[in-house]
Length: 116
Image (cartoon, rainbow, N blue to C red; front, side, top):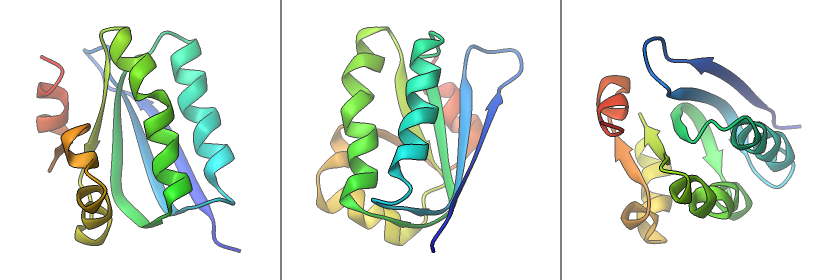
């Protein structure tokens, strides 16, 4: 079975939380990702960076995780910034028009600066 590894780290000196995903974000692994994001929101952490560098695949269900919470996050003066996205993952976001909704950057420094 395809797996998803998720790591959550606070970025020192800021109110930003980084979520690193590795593997496959699909219908089978979406519950894990939803729980991580929902836990952050319940903790009042609304400035979230998601590092896609090691993400191999994302399905429509995976995209739905981010779409389902972006409103709540933005309504609390936060955002979800996506970074280091492989070209094939970026293409999916772009084709669906998600590049108009989400800030997508190349590296962590740019992601942190997106919250300034």
